[in-house]
Length: 404
Image (cartoon, rainbow, N blue to C red; front, side, top):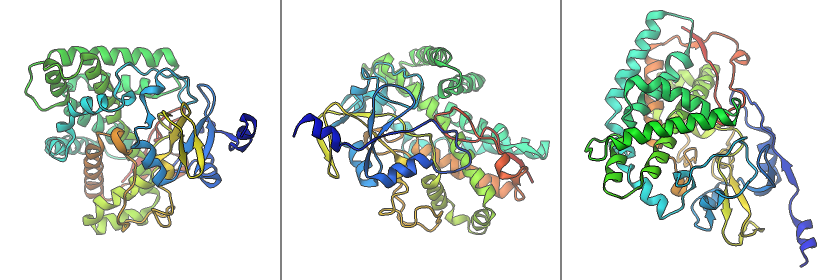
């Protein structure tokens, strides 16, 4: 087969613009791509060239768990991408492959196990109760994002990381600048450098620590020579930033619940189903815009009749996988009795989100506390007037105006 014939058999390249979507609307471009085939070709607003996109559940799990697809190889390639700036640091855990990736993740694994997360449950509940006390004391109306959904995850991740309470606001500011594409590359890079310098100091001070928070575990691992300071800092930055994803996820979750009173009624009447209901909401909510980080095929691989060549960039869509009708019957319906519910909202394979257990704990505490302590909670404006973030990589409301 000549090169020319092969080119003709490739699917067309679909341009995927950075859409500012509101509510929990599913991306219409992604819906088309899912319809077009299990494997399509996309071009995102930034970077160069095109990339493969994999949308079926089984294929997404295969690509994310197969050593033939490398994150490390992305480092030197100007792959097409959503973010206008791409600043991976050498040794950053998101761009490592096993065995280095495994070694680095192992250094903090204890903090993010079920047992490690339980360590902060009581403290998290207390911090949330204090925030709700203030909310009730100040009275309605209020912005649920500013009063609860933003300060709570920041407080919890800072607690997990071992960041002093006095530095929470600074951490939040840095995170917002790193995650937004609207401030420009320089602002994002400066915020990332400042956060890295902060963690470098904090981890350096904790080289002989026996405490269980993340920076202490990293300091001890550096002290034992298991990870370098640079690797430890990169991981700390990633975990700190990731900790604030709960603000966006829970913002979408409460937006959805407050626009669907029927769902809230069920959760109030049957508190025992809440953990399962949260899993279903996590499956349904579109957590991000477009796609996240790509991988590079290290060998020729065939996926459902499409040959992906060595060197080709490949993206997976967890959002699409969560709507695969072969795995989730009637995927567009929110079904609190869905079981099993093997959603991939926290990813899959070696790069599975280490904070998955922690995020679940926070969502459960938020749903329990807000539904039980603020029984009349409802939106203070029509649903279409809730402002959603623009130019953000992670989707979520800017504010959730509520009354009760």
